[in-house]
Image 1 (cartoon, rainbow, N blue to C red):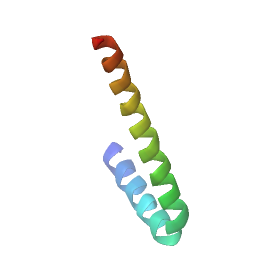
Image 2 (cartoon, rainbow, N blue to C red):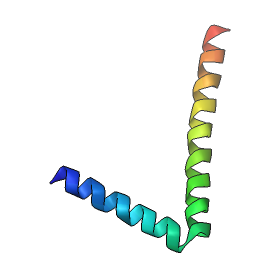
Image 3 (cartoon, one colour):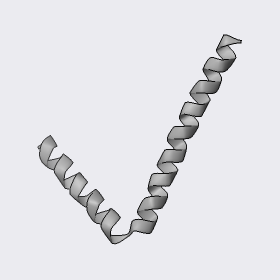
Length: 51
């Protein structure tokens, strides 16, 4: 059941990207920015920890 649900989600994701690439790109950019900000925060934490 989990495997089938994973395939269905993948197919829906590909369909979403194919039918509306602009908003999909905005979502990907937002996720990328969030991940980059998280790593930046971790880097700042360790930098302040070492000083």
